[in-house]
Length: 249
Ligand code: PEP
Image (cartoon, rainbow, N blue to C red):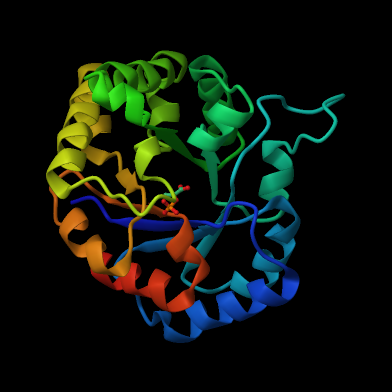
């Protein structure tokens, strides 16, 4: 059975003080969660997470990683730098990076490989826009996005990948895919991964992301191919984040 993962994506939010309050709120009521829990934070706050979360049940990670190893890449943060700060996870290919930073499927795959080779678990985001869904292109788009990763990574690397299906139209909008809509895409993704290697598909966690909240988490997480959540807005409030963790536990 796959263990569920609830990962917060703080995006470009936070301050030392706000993070301290949020993390202490999560820590104080977390108990012994029956799922994996993580927060993916802006890079400057990784050191704070390392200090505040070491020895707890909460892992931490970055929201992006450079596709390069080291060198003249101003502004980039490498996988080994993230590991220096104890990152267990790195999100790659979030739709905001694809849309605002022109990240292509192939580039996202390179980042996923870099994260994994650097010792982290890559959380690879895929998902269609509203226009693509309305044109009936969801399966084609999502297959293209996952295929880039399946082609570029070895089976060994894929064993350290988590996929997050995040329909772009559901991110930060309050619109959530119905459990059935999400399940359909998750099952398609798992079949696609299974065509490469059945064992990897069976073990790989496929998270859902897009306006997941405490009141809709349980029904989404009850679907057979939904193995957790990537949580944006609701990860910024300890009680909401914990409500989702409880639904997954
Ligand atoms: C996200 O950005 O990864 C996300 C899922 O955001 P939200 O939960 O706010 O829709």
